[in-house]
Image (cartoon, rainbow, N blue to C red; front, side):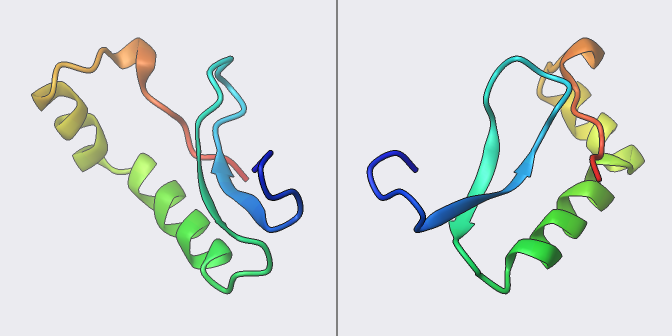
Length: 67
């Protein structure tokens, strides 16, 4: 985002973490809303927790859905 300011925007970011993570799409992309919705949906499912456990990700590192 710093190399091409204004061209991209963050579609999803977890506000509960100090680590900067997210999914970036082209600014104005029609993918932002459905992508954000899909990520929030997945983070609220039991599959998310099961997959995290399968890959050894501790509960303390799990993301939560954002608005």
